[in-house]
Image (cartoon, rainbow, N blue to C red; front, side):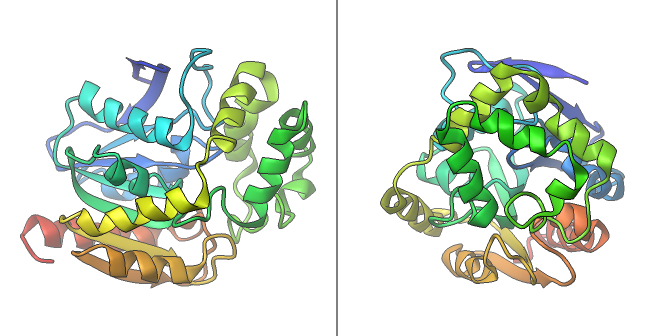
Length: 283
């Protein structure tokens, strides 16, 4: 897997290559780029898909000890990643991680030509829902993240509402989720990085101010939300679509938050339609 050295440390990424429009796909906490594997398989014939593994707990190399891995710090790493790879006019897609409002509010969206926001943290829902609040409590306790993720070695524990049961409607393949958790299971440095992110969320008032800045994103945006999402309220998807001046909004049936897991073909269809339409200049 290719890698790039950023200010915080080494980031691994997948790059399908090709001459098509660039699509950068971002994942959420305690996952890696394989979240998008089925969507990438569908879209790679038409688009150059670049999928970094962000330092959110699913990464395999700890970041530097002094790295800023707060919400804003990770958003800045995304912008740095685009700059280091000299990716321009990208379509930036995200699921679970809600960094769009941080990127735009911090003035880091110059290389983004289109946004694709699928069920994710938004407004002041950081970290999101019941699983997010459970993660925060664990991060605040000495050794809490180690204990919490050790319990997730037991497959039945992964389907509880407070862990991963409300993230995907169907269980994630065991070998995939084991890959996501391997770093947290085995490395104190990875757990340190994850803790920095979980506890590095600004006050709700600041988060809401960031969200308002999305009104200034004057490029096309697709907001695709899971109809049955129990962690990221569907109302947030509708509100985001109202904030973004050039947006279209769809809701996807039979899915929880991790739409790339539950409904990859349906999500890929909407993404392809949006990307091809907007490439032709249609809103």
